[in-house]
Image 1 (tube, rainbow, N blue to C red):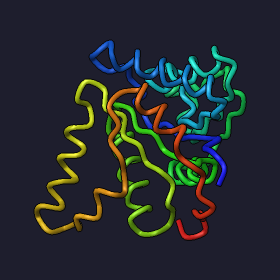
Image 2 (cartoon, helix red, strand yellow):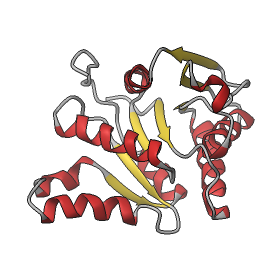
Image 3 (cartoon, rainbow, N blue to C red):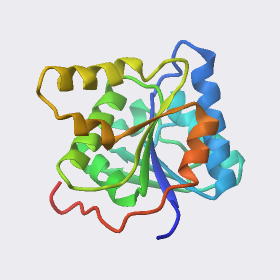
Length: 193
């Protein structure tokens, strides 16, 4: 199998309260560019999204933004993206990002990031794909998300096997090292989404 060539990064359209969040976004972008991995992201030029994209571009990498038409002004579509795909809805946006990705990385973010993360993990649980999902822990940022998933297991709403649907990685350096060990999976179709 071939190596990961394109990753979706789910992250906030805000910078967050800790400087470590933006620093992580910038380090991830630089690392993706250095590894020759294409960034697929929500298309905005603000917050964490903009920081990741800016760092990939500064490193000579390729950036594909996917943004619904109604958000092109609100999140200010990134003018420097190598490619900008404008969709007709949020669902079409997620589907297109899924189609383009070999793997998914989650950085800190808000409700949109949580929505995207839970949906991509759910799609994996349903057998719609086997693409890696990596949660990058920055200063404890993944604890609430993992606690919510653990609560569903503890309460009998999810099986213990749910833990195998994602991987928590401590920091950007470890995440980039882990990404280098992963291979693309030939499966994953958007026809059933």
